[in-house]
Length: 199
Image 1 (cartoon, rainbow, N blue to C red):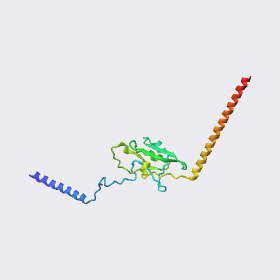
Image 2: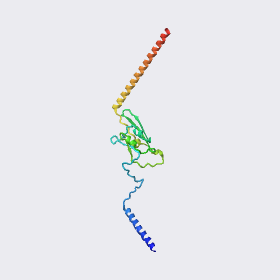
Image 3: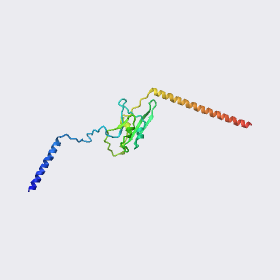
């Protein structure tokens, strides 16, 4: 009988302690987030996939298409495509493909980028059942409304046109000189054969 009352008192005491903790936590503000309706704020040093950074002055990216990020990537998950546009200094970035399925988040690309055009993003919600969803064009992601056209410098365009015309003129002169030399050589050869026939 004594054991029964002892167990009863222990159970009531345990219940009182549990209810005290429950009532205390019931009045505190909840720390859980109602995901996906609420988003978790990531710390500034969180390493998500890389992203191109936007220049606040120009509104465009600061990538110079040097390709150092792609060369420094041990996983080979970065592809940088660019082209030369007349009147624009340097190359113009046309696409920046990141295959996140093979990225190891080592940070070599960010360290190798001299103009600091890329950085780690704070994007963490990347769940998908398709592998294609993890291949990003970071240029399109930076400019979803459309990639702005590069600014053409009229002076540079004029210089490039003059340089092209001078190169074309030089090539034409070289071709004419080669044709003239070939004609002289052919005439000389025919003169020699005629002389041999006479003798």
